[in-house]
Length: 117
Image (cartoon, rainbow, N blue to C red; front, side, top):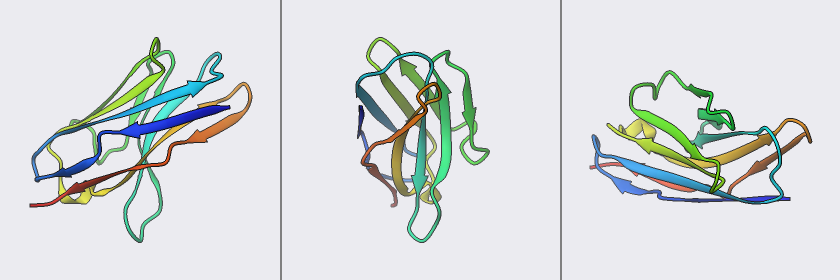
């Protein structure tokens, strides 16, 4: 079993920055993909960015050039650096891990990000 714990959310003004962290604990073996997803009120959950354990990354078009995903495999932690934040980035951000070999999918509890003046 794997547990994911997010941190780093909060309230920030438009144009500001935040860094989210997601620490994974438990039985983690082999190739996996971690990612950040978000869900705004009244909208479906959407992918923001993903990164594999070999550091291959993908981004949603809406965040390219503003957000950067990274990971520290030694700490089983993934980060999301969010710059130039916009009000439309306001959402609950969730961390997700997919282990294809299992196959298993794990979600964190979510962290609120609010971009407002």
